[in-house]
Image 1 (cartoon, rainbow, N blue to C red):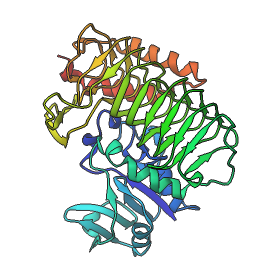
Image 2 (image 1 turned 30 degrees about the horizontal axis):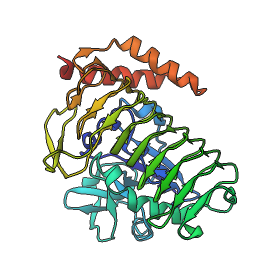
Image 3 (image 1 turned 90 degrees about the vertical axis):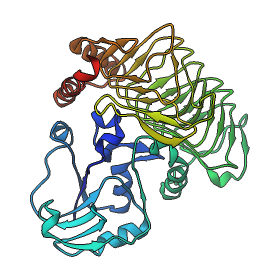
Image 4 (image 1 turned 135 degrees about the vertical axis):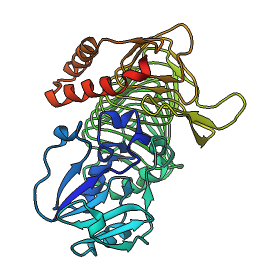
Amino acid sequence: MQIVLFEDHLVNSFLPLSHTRAIADLFAGMYSVQDRWKLFFDNDSLFIQTRNSLQNIYGAIPEGEKVYINARVIPNHEAVAAIQSLKSNEAFFIHDVCVAAKGLHMNWDSFEHRAWTAESMWLNGITDLFSVNDYLLRADFALANKKDGAKLGQYCRVIGESSNLFIHSTAKVFDAVLNVESGPIFIDEGAEVMEGSMLRGPLYIGKHAVLKMGTKCYGPSSFGEECRIGGETSNVVFHSFSNKGHDGFLGNAVVGSWVNFGADSNCSNLKNNYSTISISNDVDRNEINTGLTFCGALVGDHAKFGINTMLNTGTYIGVAANVFAGDFPPKCVPSFTWGTGVVEHNLDKAIQTAERMMQRRGKEMSAAERAVLAHVFKITAASRS
């Protein structure tokens, strides 16, 4: 069976991350959306249907009958069973939103509509990635392969049941305190937890990620592949290859890939008057009340922060923004800005910086990725004027 994860009308609700990736490529818990679906459809081919500006990154979708699934749906056994019950030219709907369909094309109007009744969780916006991360981490820990585990080092201390802790046999954990009473901790292949670190689950440390000496991590938090983390974090989601390697606090935040926080960068996640937090983005530019009391930074791919950067609650940082200032930058820093979020950053120079960081990790930017950055630069131009 061929499966296609598709996007719907809420794609801009996931900015700034959806500037540079499909919704199916968003990461939280222990997996990206697409990888989580792959666990449930083990032997099936999976493809991603996204916007024209991004499709080259994910490849073409073959001809033939396919099962289409809304990328905002979080899979579980009940949802998967319902989707597997679909017949050709049938589609599940909640009101006017398609959940899943089976057929040769994406013209849902020509399908027979069925009401979606399965219990399932949906992602509705960027803040959901940290808001539902507790649920995802617990669910993913139960799904994950935990066959190649290692014994904890003699100088480490575990608080809680050892069944809530998994350390891959190639991971290194030195003289750390790991509290799994409040949720599981999964330390993946090649990861390293340096001495003096204090971890409180639920928590995922991705492949070859590094927690620096004395790091304090409060769950629910997820750190993707090859992230470098230090200081204090609480309820954060870091996509792969991003760095917060020094002291400073970040909480209730979502961070894209190839981001670097300078030493002693700090972000507020709670307003002084304890009111709910509003956010905006560099496309719609409309302020939206999240309804959340705790919300920190929402950071796009390739963003960079100077030392001692201070960020307000609910600060939006666009793609390839290079932020440095002696005061708080605006709460919406547009993509490709320089300094305080007002001056436009040169596209070629921004791409050169991104390429240098990628080269440091042995990666090379593809032509498709360069084209995506150029597209983001174009569609966010009005926010920089």
